[in-house]
Image (cartoon, rainbow, N blue to C red; front, side, top):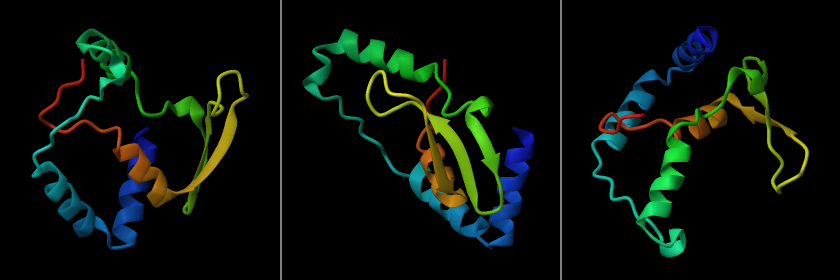
Length: 112
């Protein structure tokens, strides 16, 4: 994974995006977040059970990353419906990073 992180840092610095990304993180982390749990969970216990399953997962495992180059990342994912075969997804590097960062906890939260 260190190689991917190194490639990410190099790609950002080559494109001159370092300051933009840092500014974006400062904006996000400075915001007060108010989570909303819909009634769909039918109670607090179900919400905690859902969050517990989610909190113990990682965003993507190394085995799912099929290839990485300077412009795109190819990885495998489950099918959209239960029972469907795995599918291969290709994303531009920046879009992949945007999606990946949606799974990163804010510093005030602690992963258990």
